[in-house]
Image 1 (cartoon, rainbow, N blue to C red):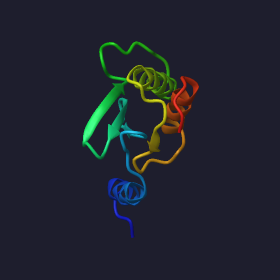
Image 2: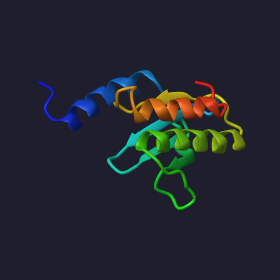
Image 3: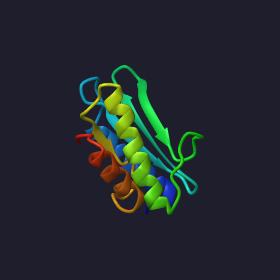
Image 4: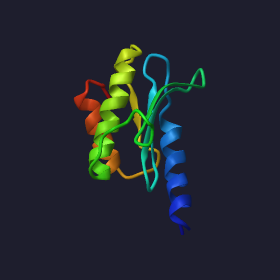
Amino acid sequence: MAGTKVSRRDRIKRGIRKRLSGSSERPRLSVYRSNKGIYAQVIDDKAGVTLVSASSLTKDFSASGTKVEQSKAVGKLIAEKALAAGISKVVFDRNGYLYHGRVKSLAEGAREAGLDF
């Protein structure tokens, strides 16, 4: 039995992280979803460094609407920051969440803004 939702997500997350890792050529785009907001980071796992990050709860973020619409805006924001930092290709890490709803919306927003994954 899987136990709680959190332990189930952690188990799925470990399986995903076994298979994918971010490098300097192709860093990892990691998504975290809370009840209030959504967060995205572009991470170089080999160096152990977060290259760029974006969140729906920062002061410079101004999109309103539903959480799905905000997620799409965060995806566009992270893509713009990544492209400005010279990053065009990433590996998408859904972090144990289903590729549905807010996570899918963030990924679509990042793709629309020019990020390749």
